[in-house]
Length: 175
Image: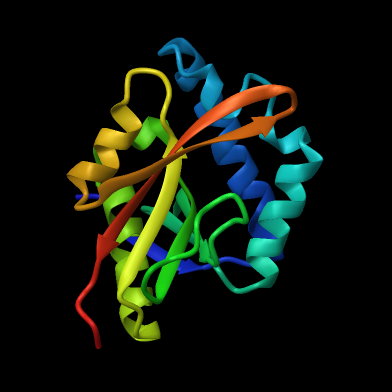
């Protein structure tokens, strides 16, 4: 059985998170989902590097390891500016990525459970996340299978192309 551990991430883990995203790109492209993150490595994207450094510096970055090897990442905090304000106090999932070579081991589920636990400690009533709404819709369906409900759709101008997103929310019991 695979042992999954989750630990806080720091600035030194930014390269690991970027590598996880880079390794996911060929899988996304092969399934027709290049619109999610594009086709260029995220590790060379100055915006992504700055974004993940901010997550780490703000204390919202977490790394999952499977049998001691980096296998996923989670970033939580405030919602990005393109998202409508929450109706209830929330914790926002800004990033969820897992190593595709470890698919089926429950890493994504473990990271989402960790986000729920962080929300409980913070005493908030809602978890929200946004994701790419294009392609075959499987990413939205993944979050729905994890207990989230699709709410608002939105479009962001990303380098001259329209990126279609879906906001999902999961109510939590008030503490």
